[in-house]
Image 1 (cartoon, one colour):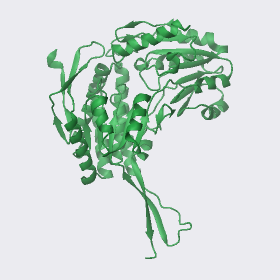
Image 2 (cartoon, one colour):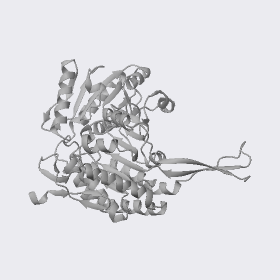
Image 3 (cartoon, one colour):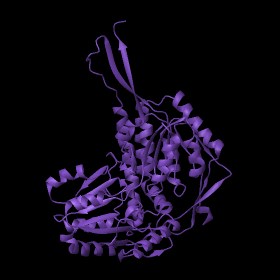
Image 4 (cartoon, one colour):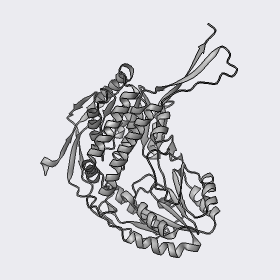
Length: 475
């Protein structure tokens, strides 16, 4: 077995570097040693930043060259889809069918970003009260970008930071999650193969308190793009001061099932998306609000679908729900559920933990003050609450410190136009769950769900500076 363990190096200034310090990465389902990765020290972090700064200042990376590199990586990802999906399943615990989708989405995101390299144009300012002057704008790369990425989408969320940064002409330093570093390393291999200029991509592995803190305190970095907890997001913003950041933070996303909903479709889709990747998705369905007129019919069908979910080995194509990222997180969720039960919550199905596998769990009779309702669970647990009026449902959705996305099932076309104005979230999904994202759309939340948008076209606008040029024609 030891011969199967992957040995991963760091990618710095166009070179693969081995270090004395190593960390172990485990298969999330079998708990077997999966990889041993090198860990960056202070000198290597500094070397990576220096290389990125030098590339920004001294290397030409034209829009055409960026397009060619990004399209080449998209092609390579599609060629290696099965290989990379298996890495996601083993290292991250994501069911293989979902992992295959993640690789396909990552390839698509590179293609979308490549297309955006053709649209990085300024504009001519209208000649109004500017006689004798010609005004226009240009777009310039902001500089070095630090991409700090999470474990739950170890490829696609890295791509959503790297592809727009490169499309805009910025060097990028990747710090992947320590639990799932291999896909970021594979991505650097593809970028190198595709011809990315030396210094434009670096990959550093290490802890948030070491590598992460050093990156935050290095004022040569112009922009930070981070997906993770609100606490860390707030720390990043406080540390970097006036420098820019795109922060994709927490959520306890909700979906409303109104009295005129297609109950069969709602029950089936919600049963799937509340527990996809063991609930470890930023927009996972955590709260369901069901109109009391349909509660019995909905609950019967919903619980039946939940009971049919297959839990187990993520490499089995029939598996719907795999393990959580580690046993510590599963224990946390178990504790939160027990606290809720002690305060009156009722477990309708699930609530059982075996190591880092937590059975799909449905709660009811939850109330404000319970962590399972108020905080981001990031686990295969969903609560169902019943309401009598739409106004009540809207208030329940909005009664949260988060505001990432929300969904609503309804056949009322007028309501579908009104509801986006009433919900305090960054995205509203009509006749689908809150757990929907396509890679070209603007994605980001309000309140403690963060600031800024992902989606290549929207991310790029935050990764360029708009420079105003004034030409005095009278001289």
